[in-house]
Length: 345
Ligand code: PHE
Image (cartoon, rainbow, N blue to C red):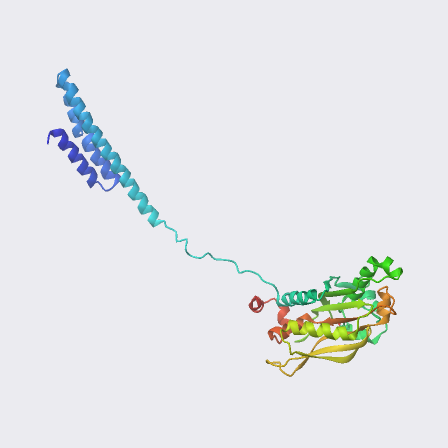
């Protein structure tokens, strides 16, 4: 092996032994630095003849190129290795699940209202919404409950400035909805033609001065109204029985229509349900008030009570929710404790 070849071999070996960029730069200096071995050989060229300079110069250049190529390759290899180490150290385990915010959900009473709307919707009832701050007229007087009527004493409520009050039931929606409906068909009604039936439910918040395990000063009701030319008490029984059996998913649920009194219905009945099995088996539970709409109320709707007849009911969705889920204190629904509420998702 001639001298140049052995210098190249030496260079390749010391580059290979250099394990850090610093070592590599030191190794480079031994061959290509100011007093490196190859640099020394170049200096020696000066004393040679022109002919020899050419030959020797070319040979040194070839050796120099080989050394530089090896140097660059080693530099690259060391940089790659360093990057590799860094990447490993900074690796992020993206397979860990992130921390999420808990998802929200519907309130149990909202779930009940959706269920009620779904069932009555399938029977052709539309859904109406009305104001919680009502007038005396819609809440009482139009419902055949004049100012000195004793039935008002069971509906004590919060009075708001300007003669308004917080509605004590959803029954004012009977009048509000019927008046709207009748207005739309006034011309047909006046011409003695038949008007499309009124078939509506009106769910919403209601207020009374009341508070215990089964009463809250704010509670929910859902009104139902069906008015036509030939709507009877029998239809009320069929519709409400069907509703309860669907709602509680129990075909042998038994209903009882217990005679009662409301100023706006005649005859009137309270509706009780009896469970056939489960923890509530045998017990009667009141779920709604109902009756045939009183002629005075039909008149206040703008209709002739000789021609139009129907039924109404008002039920308590909070009660239905308690029964469906086996909750024994109504106030839990309105305390806003997520530990309780999240159980219904
Ligand atoms: N509004 C009555 C109540 O709150 C219930 C009811 C509605 C009764 C419709 C008859 C007809 O007690």
